Image (cartoon, rainbow, N blue to C red; front, side, top):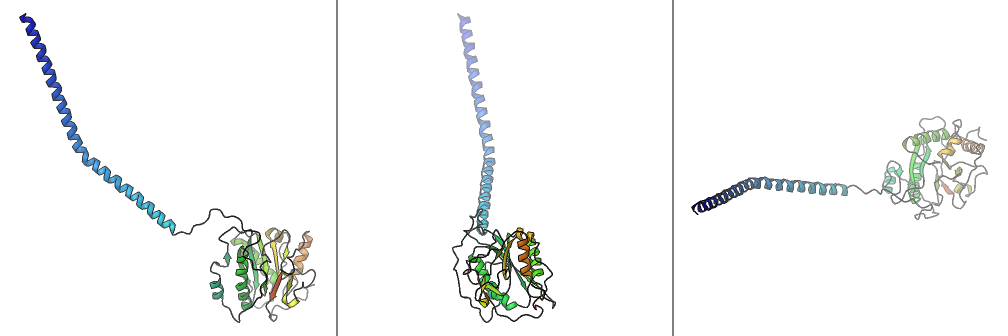
Length: 307
């Protein structure tokens, strides 16, 4: 009986010792966790502050980017083609010329033109057109032409560039050579589809006379005021003509051999016919021009070798 009581007491004490040991271990673990947590709190706070700073910086950069892009004009990634017939055309108009006009006036009247270049903003032009104007001693005529031609071409919704090719010196004028040079120089700037070879003293009266190239070489001057608006002669191919790059290449350009007035336009027509092409013209009531009066310049006397 005494032995049984001793065994019971030993088991009881062992259980109490185990419970005390477990309690001490729990207290130690809890204390260590609390200490570690207190040490981590400053780290957690610093992480939160860093995250806030990064988020604020990203938001600031995003707002700055939005603000900077707002200053850049929006460019449409895709524009629909311009219509074959522009809605801005006015038809025939009676031309008038002021006693004097300056280049500054022409520039002010055409703010969207930069260095002779223009393209429509609301659609993609059907053709890219280079206007080549041979020039010497006709400053007033040139300004009159530019003053009327820029708005005329803009109403047609063309992507165009105007090139004035000037001949210096007092030697005989060579219109054809100037146009050949202008053609080559224009191609150095842009890949033009169409070339308009344009005399400086002829101003178009009707903007339905579209300055675009056709499937055949096109003659744009059917009539003008000084001929009663009739074609000068049956084979006439001068004044203002339109040829594509391919058409001009086929005829090998103008002949450089015509010095003085006349001959090069008839020569070009013969070249066109030799390449099995034919000259096309707009309707007579549309292809009308006003010729600005002038006396024949010294150095531009009639070429006696013209046919």
